[in-house]
Length: 576
Image (tube, rainbow, N blue to C red; front, side):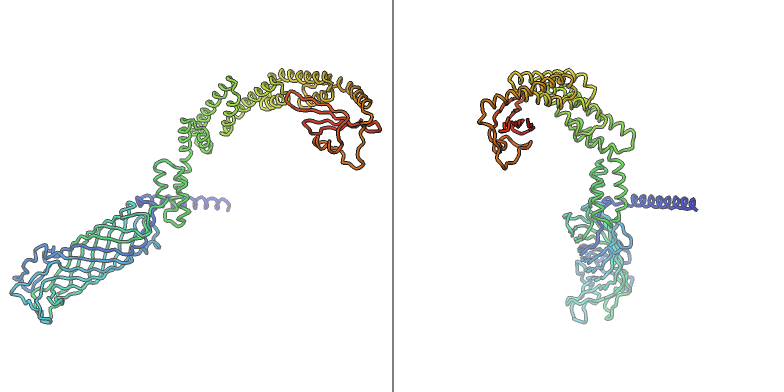
């Protein structure tokens, strides 16, 4: 049962795929040049004015006798007739039944009036007086028609469209007109006509478009015998069939190019990125458009082609050394599964990396570390994974140069900071770093010796301990010095305190009864406000401008409180 379901699913998906392919082929075959246009929905009015010529067939006028004829009827001016026509509210009803935008089907109603240009006088042997009003009769054909019409519109340009129209109607016709305005020799009948025309819009981009055009029309209007109740005329029948040419003006809604057409133009030009965005916006704007399924297929085609465009754009940005944009497009194109394109992407990444490496090397050799660092930060933003390890090595090199510079300026803590970062980025550089660390260790010891010479032993010891905490691997050098200082410091402190006690017995410190106790982190000014001036105060400024101070307060019972400051901040409290 499970296998049967799988087989049925495969067959069903195959049928759906075949059907979709058939739809695509039909859509591609019957495709309008403005493929994603909106259909013409309604023509508000269509005015036509022109000239029709009757009597172009051999038996267009019939008489009761073969010997009778109407002089001058063969003249073109006599057979020419003015024609005025108006079609109203022609609507595209068929779009609800057959949704498509290849050809628009407009159905509407029309009225037509045709009359002769020249009134031709009757021959002298004919009855020429109309009994009803006793005025002279003239040969002056006239036709009034009401019809239903069907138009087929094909828009091949944003400003032009052709159409074919079929009319079927009922007409009232007459051959004579009296001077008093009465019509005679009347007849009625059915008419049909075929018209072929072209229209041009005066302006596009509006809801209702004003169109001007030209139309050629053939009309068939064959009626029964003329009604002649007074037996005045030898004319028995008149064929109103005609060929005419019209100048037309109309107002129509629809026929607008959409974002889909712009997307198609972009697609054909190779801009698949912009084309995809426009197709997506087209679908959002026209969710029920007949070409929505085609737009979805075009989006997929764009997705398949975008990586190739992105690589081409990246290569153009490489030529102008805009590596940020180039890398952006290469990163996006990396989603492709085309192995040849992936190879091309890697090649371009290598070109970017090569340029930056050469520039960084040049600046490091020129000892322009600042510029090298700027370039390194730039290349990091490109996120080229293939050179991640190489970038770490360059960061290590830059940090190493920073450490060397601070060592030369005897700013030991900064030097240690950059040497540490250098080793973390690239551990193999330790061999180059270690000699400089020894130099830093001896530099700290030298600073300690200076402090001891100035009898600032407490600050010397604190400085040495700080150096060892920052860089434990120099402990083998500083350990011996720390131990010696710790052994001797008690004696020096006691000597200093005893000396101060002997000199300032009356200066012994008597704290207030209720007083907040000093805490680490307080500023020196706060301590002064709490405890007042100390009995003993010493100060040391190191090579990088840091200030270390030792304050001693002596209580009446002989106890001492030692306060250690760094840059006016209390770091440590000792009770003796």
